[in-house]
Amino acid sequence: MLLAASQPIWSLPLEQVYPALQTRPEGLTQQEADRRLEEFGANRLPSLKRRPLVLRFLDQMVHFMALLLWCAGGMAFAAGTPSWAGRSGRWC
Image 1: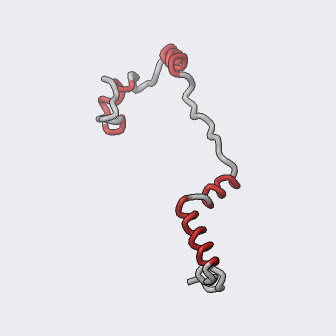
Image 2: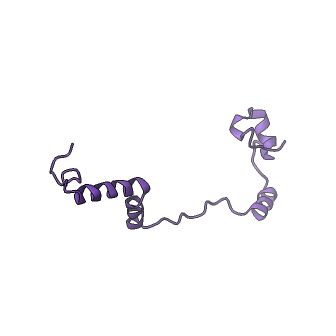
Image 3: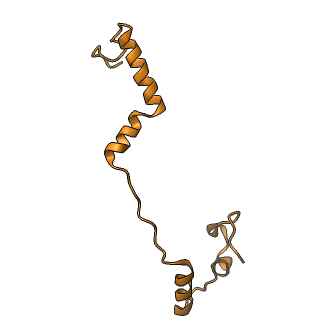
């Protein structure tokens, strides 16, 4: 029995799990483990390449909705209504 995306492993009944994974309750033999290691490689997740915090913050400042707010604030300030641009000291 082969695994399919239409029926994930966690949805199988217990008696079908071992044949689907081609194993047994005792686990793999050393020879089978070595064969799978050579065929599929080590069971490791790739390391994450994270962007620096400053760049992630700057991404938020140039997001489409943030740019709309920047433009609205700039236009309100240019129109002579700085209170609409956020300089009134009130937070409402």
